Amino acid sequence: MRTTLNIDDALLAKAKALAAREHTSLTRLIEQGLALRLRTQPPCPESQPPALPIYAGKGGLRTTVADAVSHRALLDAADEPE
Image (cartoon, rainbow, N blue to C red; front, top):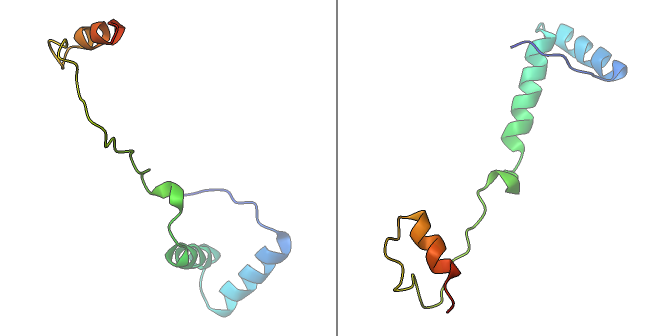
C-alpha cells in the first residue's frame, strides 16, 4: 500500500543512511521499525471491550408485559404506573 508520511528531515537523512549501510530500502526499514514498535507496545485499554455492568438485584419483567419481544408491549408496560 502506498502512503505519504511527514518525517523530520534529520530523521529521514539518518534513516536513509542506515538503509544504505544495511543494503535495504527505506520502505523495509520503516516497516521493520513499525513492526518492532507494535510488537513491544502493550495493548491499549481502548482496544479492550468495556466491561458490561451486571444487575444483581431482584426483579425482571413486569407481569403486565404480554410479549417481551414486542417493542409496543415493552413501551406500554414502561408507561404504566408502578
